[in-house]
Length: 169
Ligand SMILES: [Zn+2]
Image (cartoon, rainbow, N blue to C red):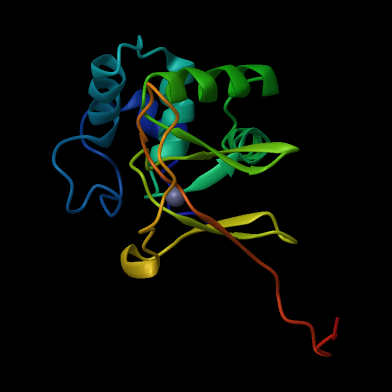
């Protein structure tokens, strides 16, 4: 199901990673990289932050809600509450490690790639996909209000699956 190493094994064995696959092509130990990354972002690398950070950042760019991360933590036997997951996600976001996406009023999605990019959102499935780099150009923007400048533009293109029978309006 997942190519994550067993979390406890990783947390307990600080140096080389058993199995090796995951670390192939990376410099050093992913866990000490993560520890450094948290420190550089001004966060103390507590066990909980390391555990959740490992789940978040160990598998490339991802988009997930607190509930999704909580489910993963439960499966990985990380003893955290949903409230801790929420708090940690918000701390990571404030520290610039994650970006919160405004996709759906009812749920916050967090992106492990904090740089500016655009998204597809599959509304029915609640799934978020990165748009290819060349996917969109925004070449006509209104002037920012007096005293303001545009800091960034993020586009969300909402998708739905085509039904077997095309409905006409
Ligand atoms: Zn993204």
